Length: 579
Ligand code: ATP
Ligand code: MG
Image (cartoon, rainbow, N blue to C red):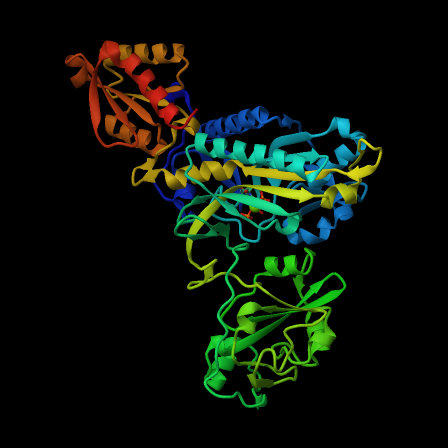
C-alpha cells in the first residue's frame, strides 16, 4: 500500500465527545468516523484492523470445531416473544415494523434464531454435538452509548451456540470455547483476566467473562490478592459479616414521625443516624410474584443475585401502586416488620441478619421504626423467607476470609452455559439412544470484535498515538521515506517495499511529498509496530533506520540487510503473541 493513494484522514484535534483514549485515537488516526450516536464508519485502516481480529477469531473458532453460518440480523419479534425476551430485553432492542404491519427486531444477539434453526433440523442424538457461529453486526439501543467502539449501538459480534446431549458433553463444548477465547485474546495482544460471571438475562447455570483490566473500563473486577478468586461485580460473593453484639438490651421498636423523609440520606439527616444503622426494604416484581428484599442502608442491592435466589426469573422494581398495596404506605416507608405475609418471597441480606438493631420503614406513611432487631422484630426464617448474599461487594468485604480488591476492566467476551432455557421454549429436542425425547443442552459464546479493537488501543498508546500489537495492526511495517523527492531515497524505499511485499509482509510505504516531521507524526499516530526510515543522511552512510513503535531508540541497518532484518523482527513480534 502506498500512503499517497490511501484514504487515511488523520486529524490533530481531539474530538470533543471522546472521553477515552481509544475513542480519541480511533478518530485522530483516521480509523473511524462517527455517523450518529453509537454508530461508526470504519475507514480503510480501521477496517483492516477489524478484519485481522475477525480472521483470528474465525481461525480459532474453526480450530475448536465450531462451524460458521450467517443468520439474518432482522428477526421476527414473534421469535423473541416465545422466549419472553421481547419483554426482558426492554428498550435495548431495536424494533421495526414492515409494510405488512409485522414487527421485527434488529438482533442484539441470536439465541432465538439459532435454537429455532436447530429445532427444525435436529432429530437424533447422532447429530450432536453441534456448535454454530456467525460474525455479524449486532444492534443494541444502549441507554448510554459511549467510549466510541466500546459501547456502541451497532457493533460486530462473534456469537456461537453449542447444542449437546447432556451436561457432560456441554462441559466439553464450553471448555473448547473457553480455551479458544484464551488463544484469541492472547493472539490479539490483550492482557486479560477471566472472571466468574452471572448469566443474567441469558439464563443458565455458569458463565465466565474475559475482561481486559483498564482504568477506562465500565466493568468492575473483584478479586483476591492471591488470585484464588476473581469475579465480576454482579457475581462476586461476599462472606457473611460477624453478628453484631449489642452493648445493652435493645428496647422494643419505637415508631418515629419522619414526615416526607423517604430516602436513606434524608432519614439519616433527620434522625442523625448513619446509613449502616438503616435497614432498607425494596419491593420487586417477578412476573406475578412480589418479592421484598432487605439490605443494610449503606449497601446496594444486587438485582442479579436477588434474581438467582428467587429462581432466575426476570425481576423489576415494583410499580408504585404495588409498593403501596404491599406496604400500605407511600413509597419510601417500606419496612421488614410484618411484610413477609404480604409478599411471595422475602429475601434478607446476611449483613442485615448480622445487625444488632436498625432503623427501618414502618409500612406507614411518614413513619420509621427505631430499635428493629432482626430475628426478634421480623423473622429470619420461614417458608418464604431466605437469608442470603444479595448485595454488591464493597470495600472491606472478604471472600472465604480473604480481602476483596477491585479494579476496572472492559468485558471483551463472555461464555455461558445456557442449559435448556431456549431449547425447551423453542422445541430444540432430540431422541436419545433409548428413544426418549430430550431438549438440547445449550451454551452460547460471544466476543465483541470492536471491543477487542478499542481495548487494544486503550492498552497500547502514548502521547504520540496508538501502539498496535502486530497481529491486529492495520499494517505490520511502515516505510517512511523522508525525502521522497530524492531519487535515491525513493529508489531504496521502493526496493525495500517491493521486497517486503514479495515476502508477504503487510507494509505501508509513506511516499507522500511531505516533510519528514509530518510523516513521523502520522506513523506514530497510526501506530504501525515497525518503522523503517529511509533518508538522505543515513543513505549516504549506506544505512536505513529501524525503529519499533513501542520503543524510543532506533537502530541503523545496512541497506542490503534491511529486508531480512525486518522480516526477522516481524516474526519475533508475532511469536511473542503465538501468532
Ligand atoms: P455489557 O455488559 O458491556 O453491556 P453484555 O454482557 O451485555 O455487555 P454480551 O451480551 O455478553 O454483552 O455480548 C457479547 C460481547 O459483545 C461482549 O462481551 C462485548 O465484547 C460485546 N458487546 C456487547 N455490547 C456491546 C456494545 N454496546 N458495543 C460494543 N461491543 C459490545
Ligand atoms: Mg456479557
